[in-house]
Image (cartoon, rainbow, N blue to C red; front, side, top):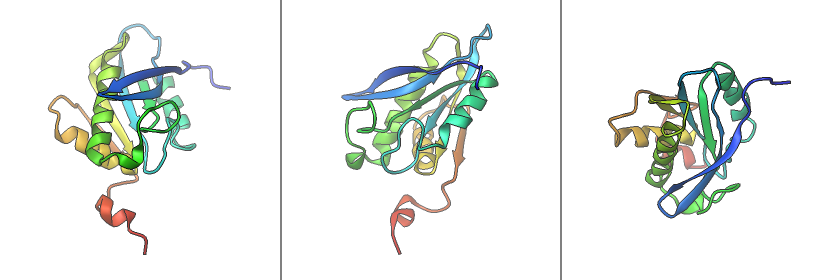
Length: 153
């Protein structure tokens, strides 16, 4: 049974869209580095199926603040992911980044983005329009363009 920090439910906004997520901030004294986890294609929630919880737990146990959120129109988030462009989703990731950086106990200059699958394109797009992002991790992507990946043979 995990004994580390527990996530709490949060909401934040990107324009007219309200995004709901889970935030874990370790209580180790001082400020923690942080990561925003961005899920893959389709209706991905803050857990990205079963993929994010063990990563989130490992990072939090290591003293890293973690924010993951429901994509537009999924779980507690408003909007509709089917109407969103990669740019819209990147703006959501940037709003999540700003939200996490503003939390007490988080070292704002040490917060980056982790994108899985489609989330990899999303975080790369978010990074392309910001000059204050110290790092980005892409996982399970992008080996080809989004258009090629989404084409069914």
